[in-house]
Image 1: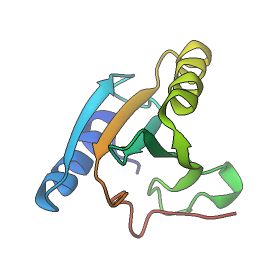
Image 2 (image 1 turned 45 degrees about the vertical axis):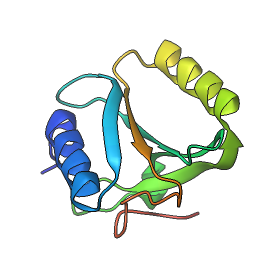
Image 3 (image 1 turned 135 degrees about the vertical axis):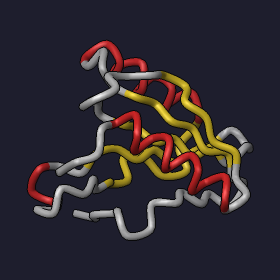
Image 4 (image 1 turned 30 degrees about the horizontal axis):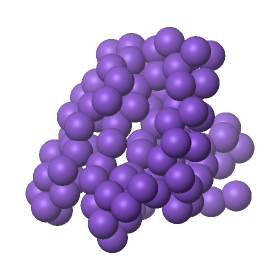
Length: 113
């Protein structure tokens, strides 16, 4: 059984805080099943973006899986993409982590194509 989006986001932010990085909900989506986008700001005008893995890369155990959608991209470029996502899916969550090293705290959850 998959965790509700709101519970997953709270746990993820706690994981980031324990690792010593700041994280916040930038856009709140549907509490139960909203898609979650994770932006990792490097605090230098660039960021990485992670989103839900495509169905073929998702796991069968109910765990959420992530894929990198952008790496070291300009903040403005990622902002545009997130605005577009929100227009297409009003239930989407946007979580931002601030870390100069680009740590995403998604170890064990990444699926790369």
